[in-house]
Structure formats: structure tokens, C-alpha cells
Amino acid sequence: MTIASVTQLVCFIALSLTLVLGALGVVLLPNIVYSAFLLAGVFLSVAGLYLLLNASFVAAAQVLVYVGAVNVLILFAIMLVNKKEAMAEIPGLLLRRVLSGGVCLGLFLLILRVDLTTPWAVPGPTPLGDDSTVLIGIHLFSDYLLPFELASVLLLMAMIGAIVLARRDVFSSDVITGEAADQGLIEKERTPLLLESTAGETTLLEKV
Amino acid sequence: MLIDPAPVPLITSRPALAVVGPGIDLQSSFTSTLEGFGLSQGTAHLLWLPLPMLLVLVAAVIGVLVNVWLERKISAAVQQRIGPEYAGALGVLQPMADGLKLLFKEDVIPHRADGLLFTLGPVLVLVPVILSWLVVPFGQNLLISDVGIGVFLWIALSSIQPIGLLMSGYASNNKYSLLGGLRAAAQSISYEIPLALAVLAVVMMSNSLSTVDIVNQQSGAGILSWNIWRQPVGFLIFWICALAECERLPFDLPEAEEELVAGYQTEYAGMKFALFYLGSYINLVLSALLVAVLYLGGWGFPFPVEWLAGALGQSVDAPLVQVITGSLGIVMTVLKAYLLVFIAILLRWTLPRVRIDQLLDLGWKFLLPIALVNLLVTAGLKLAFPAFFGG
Image 1: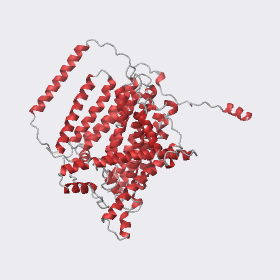
Image 2: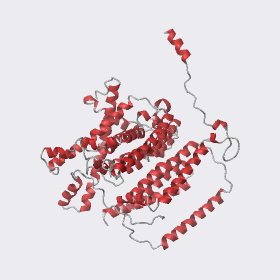
Image 3: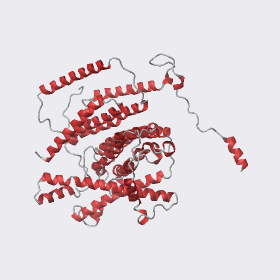
């Protein structure tokens, strides 16, 4: 065994362990903030696995999009609404947990079966290394152009939807409930924070 | 899918932009020397690996010390004071004294704070910044690793930092800390987009994400071929965004003293506070270095060293000339970076702080559209004048 292959093996084991344990922690931990931070660890170890597969561009994109954008937004949402109050009792919690656990176990067994029955080509195709950035660009602008553009339209729709939901002054009634919109939430013209005090200034000047 | 998948032209090698000679390759000479002593190639490589990393780490920390001293001295000059004077000549040992003081202070973890996250936060702020030094070139071969994704790696790594800030803000169990952390994350996210778009315009001109290729693309005619002349708007956008990412003063909302005590750093003391301190200064030097690499010709001399060597009748590949050009490259990179650091420090001590709404307006309503227009114009100019804007 060369030094390179040993390093690779150690990295793979460490990354896989953090990935699996972190993912379990995300689901099982009762503290939602810990779950969100562990999710960042899971995303980072996935990026590490991409690096081991010589896909450095995908790894960097994974860090930028999932850790830098998605996870930060999740944390933002949690920290802005975290009121530290006890959650209401959910009826039949144990049954729900058993059911969802069963579904997850079934999915896991399905994936395990696919993994064991597929004839994997070992070793896989030779990695492209740094040229993959160029190739990804070429593919995005030739044979994957339509899915690429459709994804951008989807994002545009989501953005417009978010703006409409956030700016309630567009409609006089609430979009979801149909009730009259809460006037207190409507964005008002900005009022000057510092009141004009020309009268006071003149008297001061006169005194001087 | 729709279009018949034509055979994709495989680009197997980087565009041959190198006008400069190959330069000194310390790695190959080091490994070949060790192999001459009878070591195997793998062992020689293994012995080489930690050397550049340690060197860059030491360089980064020394850069911070210089930076702290400059900050103290320049702020003193701006305010017509003398500044540190007794610790060493001209107070050069003052940053060491600061560091030692922080090292010996008690490491306080506040009661009811989350100890684990409280400790992990500063580490998550510092580590990505230090990792980003991986791609900073000081010469043709004088960098830790010429990874193909170059500047993209830096942009991706700098997006991890807000998580550390949020973590330390939350774990402090203090409302000022939480607000500071949230502000820091919001600011970092807002300014990352125009920053990435400004970098994208440069990348478009040099056809590569690698920092070495970006510098080589600017090395044709000395100072005239630097990117700042072709990307003046991009340079300003990048500099403003870099200052905002470093939380330097016109944009130091996350730690605004009057409003938030010290933001996410409020509860920190001792070495954990020092990690934040180190992180912010290393980030400032790193940003200045990257501005130098992206817009000011990196290690390039204001006029090409090849012309100088030719005028003196020397070959560029001669060993002595190579050593001189290599050292000149390092000096030029550091000089440009510290010129920018000087401007940043001067800005800090002259400008007032912006308000949070002004900050977000500037980022989203001004810099983002300008950066998009800059990208579009660059693409148009590249198509119109491929000779000047990279074919």
C-alpha cells in the first residue's frame, strides 16, 4: 500500500463516519439548533467525499450552495423564531415514530438491495480532474440546456412567490386565508427618524 | 437531450498563456535532492508536503502582527497621536505584547452558555480563512497548490464563515451576541453575490479559475496589462465587497460598539477572542492579496522583468536571474497587498459607519445590478475585442 492510498482510505472512513453519525444526529437530536449545525457537518463531509472522487468543482459548489446558502438560511430561520417554549404534546407520538422509522428502514433496505445487486464497474471511469469545470460548462450549454433553463424558471417562480407573500400591500385581503390583510404589516413610507428642530436651533444661536 | 450530443471537445491542457518562464520550482528540486540521498519518491514528497503549509501559516500570522502594528501606528497618525512607542523600536513589539496578553487571559465560558458551540464557533471562523491561503500565489510555482478551481475554492470557503459567526452568536446566550451573529451572516451573504460576480468577470477574461493563470493573463505588458484597467468597475465592487466580508469599518455593523457592545464577540475572552481577532486580520490580508492577484497583476513587476533582463543582456532562465525575479515577485505581491491594507486602515479611521438599511441597500440595490451589468459588458467586450479581453 502506498502512502497516497492509505491517506485516501483514512479520509474515506473518517468522512463516511461523520456523514452517517451526523445524519443520524440531525434526525434524532431533540435540540433543533444542534440538528441544523450538524447538517452543515453532513454537507461538508459530502463535499469531502466529492473531493475524494476527484470532483473538486462539484465539491466547491456543494460547500457554496448547501453550506453557505441553504444551511445558513435554515439557521437564520431557526434563530429568528426560536422562542424557547415547550412544544405542544403531539398525540400518538410513539406510533408516529415507529411508523416513520419503519418507512425509513424499508427505504434503506431497498437501497441496500440495489447496492448489492448492481454489478459495479470497478475501478470506475478515469476522473477528469480540473478539466471537469470546462466539461460541466459545455454540457450545461449544449445537451442539458433545457433542464438548466427550466430550473432557472422554477427559481424565478419561487422568488416572485416569496415577494408576493412577503409584500402584503399588494392585495387588500390575505392570499391564503382570504381575510382582510393586517394593516399593521403593510410597509409604510419611511418617516424621518430625527425630527426637524430648526426652532430650537435658532433660539440657541440667538442666545450665543 | 434536444440537441444531438456532438462529441465534446476535450480540453486536456490549460491554455498556454505562460509568457513568463517556468520560474523556480522548489518542489521538484527539493524532492530530487532528497531522492539523491536515497529516499523513495513517496517519502520525499511526504517530507515536502508540510513545508509550504507551515511557511504560509507562519507568513499569515506574521502578516497579522505587521497588520496590527500598522493599524495602531496609522490610526495614531490619523488622530495626531504617537501610538505605541516603548515596546521595541517604534513599538514593533506591541502586537506581540497584545498576543501574549490574550494568551494569558482567563478563558471564560459564561454561565448558561452552550460550551461546545461556544468553543467551536471561533474555530469555524478561523479555519476557512487559513485554508483559503492554499490558492494565493507569490510566484509561478510559489503557492501551496495550483488547484484548478482556484478562486472558486476561496469563494466557497468564505461562505462557511457565517456558520461560525451564527454559532458563536447563538452559543453566547446573549441578545447582543445573537443580533451581531445574525447581522454578520446577513451581511456576509448579501456581499458574497456581487463579489462572486466581480470575480466571474475576471475569470471570463482569463478563461480559467486558477489564480496562477489569472496572473499570467495579466503579464503581457507590465502595468498596462493589469486587470484594473480592463475591470475598473469590477475592482471597486470587489474591494467594497471584500471590506464588507472582512467587517472592516464602513461596514462593521456586526460589532458596532454603540449598538451591540461588540456583537458576536461580546462574551469572548482570552484565546477564543484572539481567534476572532486573528481571523479578521488574516482575512483582511487575504482579501488584499486576492485583489492584488485578480486586479493588480499578482507578482508582476510594473514593467516586465523579461525586458529588464534582456536590456541587461541576461537570459531569463539563468539561475541567478530566476532567484532575483522570484524574490522580486514575492516582494511585489506583498507590497501591493500592504498598499491595499494601508488604504483599508485609512478608510477605517476616516469613514463613519453605515446604517444597517444603508448597508443592505448598497449590497442588493446598487452593487448587485452594477456587478451584473459589469459581467454583461465584459462578455460583450470579450466577443468584440478578443485580443484585449482574453479570447
